[in-house]
Each structure stands twice: as structure tokens, then as C-alpha cells.
Length: 152
Image (cartoon, rainbow, N blue to C red; front, side):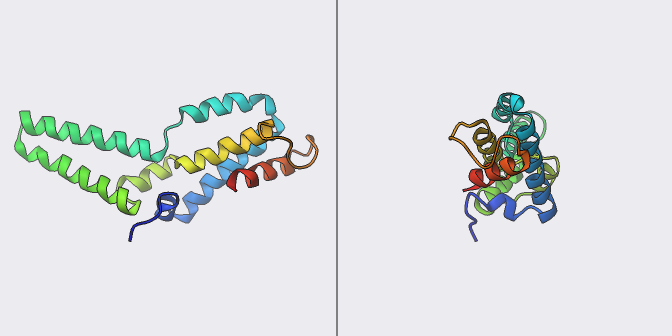
């Protein structure tokens, strides 16, 4: 079965890890609701963050290139490495799962959508899309409204 692009990684991630990631996003938005002067810095950090797809691609290309080079210079049996890596990469493209995925998710690598959820919630808090929620002094409710708007 081919999973949709949006939910294929979370679907193949344990619910505990998915919940941890969601809680980290919510915690960040709540903290930034109380410290709006730091939103710009956090948005910059989010621009620099590598999502899980980019990390998998970089990992796969590094291993495949290494296997080809070792196969060409040391022993042809090294060519099994790029064959295996590209098979796993294809499996990830189709199903949304491959062997490194659980490790990367435990390490905190998020999907592009998870990063964008935090980004848009922070932009909503900053007022980029107009006023949101209750008074500016009610940080928890403003954070909840910003998260809800970002997930729409």
C-alpha cells in the first residue's frame, strides 16, 4: 500500500514518539507566547532545521557513494551497500518506512509538516496573519489558538 506523502512517516513512527514531537511543538509555541521577542530567532532556527526526509536522503547518498567508491577501489562486494541503500530508499519513498527511520525519529528529526506546524503557529503568535485568540496576556490560550490555526 502506498501511503500519502503527508502522513507516511508519522504512520510508521511509534505513537509515543509522535506524541513527544507534538508535545515539543506545543511546548515551544507556549514558551514563545510568553517570550514573543524570541520568535524571530526560533523561526531562523526552524529555517536551518533538517527534516527527516532530507536527513535520509543525505544519509543514503553518502552510503551509496561510499559503497560505489569502495566497490571500485577495494572489493566489488562493497557494491552490495549501494544496492541495499537504494532499495531502502525506494521502500521509504513508497511506504514511508525504512530501517533508519525509527532511529532518526527517536533522535528528534521531524517531518517537514511538523516543522511547518511550529513555524506557522509562531508566525500566528507574532501577528503575521492578523490578531488571534484572547488577550495578549493569556499566553496559554493564545498558544492553543496559534497551534490550532497552524494545523488547519
